[in-house]
Image (tube, rainbow, N blue to C red; front, side):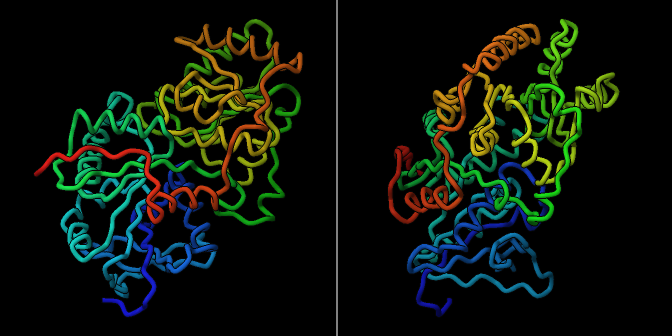
Length: 395
């Protein structure tokens, strides 16, 4: 038992300690942590922790939360008391299912457990993911819905989808499961590692200033539809439309053919650019220097690039998804496209609006910084402001 009188907000960094994938979810994990460390909730101490293999230990972080480290062989085991909270903002697919007994033990000692849910795509559309992801996600979802005191979703559309899933797959539990909503922040310069000099010195390819540039941000995956976007741009180039396409994102899964196509494309480093390992500085410069963000994904839990684009005044072209509508409202331009030809036609329509100065501006898109995002999380976890409750299914 720990002696400090203030309760602990235990911030789970197990996945970041194990592997920093620089994913969108991990941008969220860092951004929320930095906000909580900068302004802890009144009366609480914020303590980053991680799964040290059979027990939780305190993680070493700098005051700004940027540098996170474990201390193998010198771990300081977690000490808890009733009233402490464990918050899982990162997606720890391996740690949580493997530590169900440990998490249940913490709960028996009076620790409340809360986790973020970003989407249900792996169980809704397993065909979009590499073998094993859907099964691992299902185990994680089964674990958190059975154990957690509450789950916080990043959008109301995600919360509604989760509630539908729970209706069809009710967890066996004695107490209702609280479901909340907390929007994601956007503050690229502080939410990602990097220093001011790097952010100031980023240089973009000179070709990007010669013609309009469409920017796509996200891991190369089938559902992100970078292939459809390239199909559309090839059609527009053939019609004499002069556009750049910049794709920022590392290769994901089921994209070997697309990756080879991008690298060998005759427009590569001309009107087509793929930045597999873009620095934070380059991404920030691209948000400032592009003509529009193209969010072509077939499925998302939120769409953080929309918020980041709006933060920097970059217009948004988005597929007409419910979650994009929730995030973007009237401050984005939406399209339907089943193939490259339909997307090419949609882009022609947007370009005409853009030239006429009539394309929707993103400036008014509602957006949060990480402090406000963390505040909405705490409203649920500490303030009890929940969206809905999932019904009880007795064990």
